[in-house]
Image 1: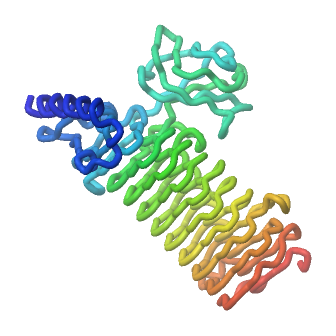
Image 2 (image 1 turned 90 degrees about the horizontal axis):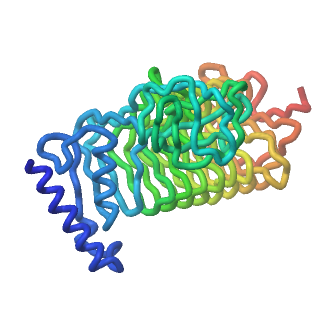
Length: 420
């Protein structure tokens, strides 16, 4: 009762302030100090669910402020949706946002472009408010996947809040599942997520597409910071940010994911990735996708991932990779993937990195990347697993090399494909 009374008074205060001081909402010290607590008998919102967190975020978002999560395990059956000018702050590793059990079924009629309903074999387990993804065997990745929220369920018909973006065929393994993010930042500004664990509960969830869902998904947003967050065991990508500016991922751990650890892309300049531990993900530790330019990747440990440590390519220019330790990945430590010359990752600098014991090449170059500088890096190979320190494919060009150190490699320090 105490918590309910406190929250009602807070809501009235927020409404009054927003009506009379709307122009000053982002600068008032009172707003900066506003906080709602969630989780436990003494909190303003007592529940341990995504609905409880969302209730607090929506209230604070009217003026800006902080939602503080107490220790505990919060059941996440739909993504926590961040709003502009809101900070979501946990109480450390004891604050765990854990995905509930996944549900999936085939649909039994074609699901057409613009349609707002899907007729399915079995709607059991789906709930209003869940986020779902819709696919078939042709349209099953990235921007070909439809993502929407369930607005209603009537018998075996699931209604969604946003029209489908493709024509999907039921006879091509048409699927709808509740695979979705733990936390989402969509169309928002000035957001911080910190000091908590996002547990994807991978063993009980279906695979989620990385452009539409992730442990933490950031889409069409700017000035976003994710700090000291452990994204673990998510059946998809750990943190994905697409169509963004000024995103910072720092002091985080990203582990045990079913796809890439970190995935910036689709035009995400001014990215900062620093002091993270990215390990034991099924594909790349860091996949720098399209147009991630003027960015800094510093002080990270990137290791034991299922393919490359770092992979970068399409118009990913003018970036600094400094002081990273990239080791024990199952393929190359760093891979510059093949691109046409105009789209290659030009003007990038790799300095002071340790590239160690990867199970491919230490550093491979497949594209015409101009003004690529490798300086003061150490290519360690104590396990003798790296076949070459630097391997330049026929489609690549030689980078500028300054003061790099090399352990002995089977094929040599700098090797050209045409020489073999």
